[in-house]
Length: 96
Image (tube, rainbow, N blue to C red):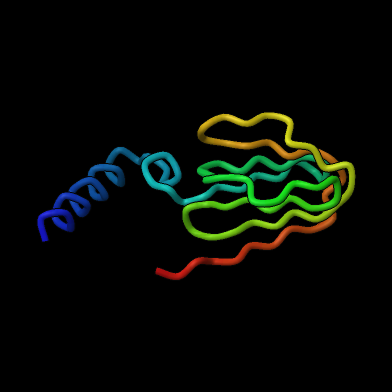
């Protein structure tokens, strides 16, 4: 019960300060730049990595990226940048 009250207060404070949800939570944010670059914030890990398919785990589900000449260009603890010819991507939500 105490955790829920604290979470509610933080949520209200973040809304007042207009802080984006992806900054203070583990919600993934996917940004596409054309069809050649994708940035995924708040990822957990890399499950599969091939030149034509990459599968990434997030705190809310799985992201699959299909294409060719796919590369993991930049990886930090918070985000990952995928480059190459991205043809499609899909995501599968993990339910709590």
